[in-house]
Image 1: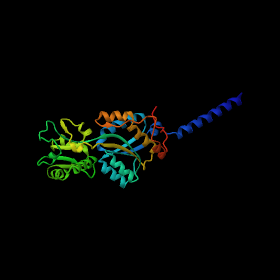
Image 2: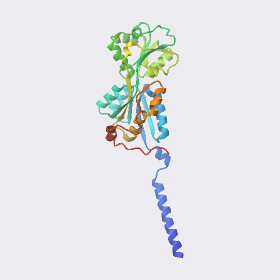
Image 3: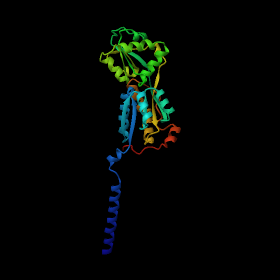
Image 4: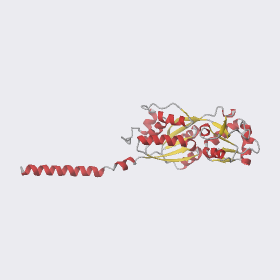
Length: 289
């Protein structure tokens, strides 16, 4: 009888010891939740919807996401010099195309579309009705810097195509200003610092007390907001899942709520097979219960 009890307590002690060792090796749940971290480079033009989509994503997944905002051109320049991070969201697909050509991304996914428009103060006090009016002295105009911002690049391209750029540029240099991001351009109009701006229609929809002019020069100027999964990603599977979530039904609804024209949402049960294979995609285990 005594030996039986002795064996029982010895076995119990071994079980307790094994359990303690297992618990010691397993991270605390809070630490485990924060173990996955992504860095996202995001065009300032889509800051508002991206923040909302990520907020929704983080309710489902335990992932820390660091976001750096800027003009699409300046972000691409940074990635070209120092290719680190997980995702790159550009205000138009030409920048993810360039990133692809530079060997920086695995795949790009279109999310939504935007079109440049002219915006002026409510009631149009300066009587600005078309693109040529932006060249009129002394109209004060704020444009995106073509070297670092997508809106600036597209504005210059379509005005050059129409033969208007030289005159508009001359007036901006004399009476106006170039800004590095489209939100800064929009703020110039809200603050009364300028009489007219060129911004994305989705940005204009977020501004109060303005009027929108859609000049003929921008009739075919639709641009696609795109996300690229970076080759430098240390968590390509998780980065891919976030990119796919941006294109999901939830992402589509958030983009549309904020004035963007979303593209078709991904089937929640499907994924681009080429991209999946290239990153060895498997469903991440960071989902919250």
